[in-house]
Amino acid sequence: METHTAAEILASLGHESRLAIFRLLVEAGPQGIHATAIGEKLGIANATLSFHLAHLSRVGLIKGERESRFIHYSTEYATMDELIAFLTQNCCQGGQCLPQAASVTTIAKRRDGSVR
Image 1: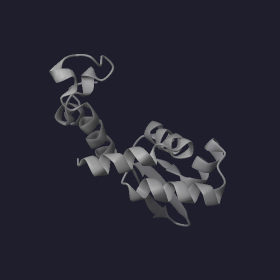
Image 2: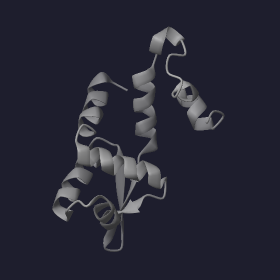
Image 3: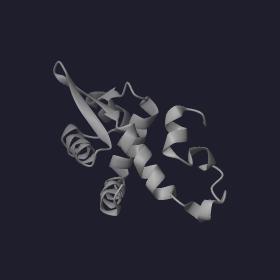
Image 4: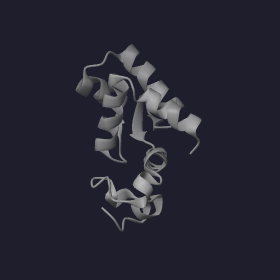
């Protein structure tokens, strides 16, 4: 991941509502949630929610798929994975300074499920 891309993604998460939306979608798992449910759970008006969802989609953190007259949103886990790897790459010169992140030291380990 390039520094510019990481900066754009982090900037998008720098807004309280977008961070709440992203965390809700991460919790929901790969099946995701309909936009209406996101708005209801977080108490965000439809127009504002659409703006934030579009922003998160534009930076590649989430994706939306139309289902009938609703849009179903889910996390783009590959983007999240790349961002985490970018942020922790060569951390502490390979030392174990981040005990909560020790299990996610490489993209390969996270993707193959060998470390949880």
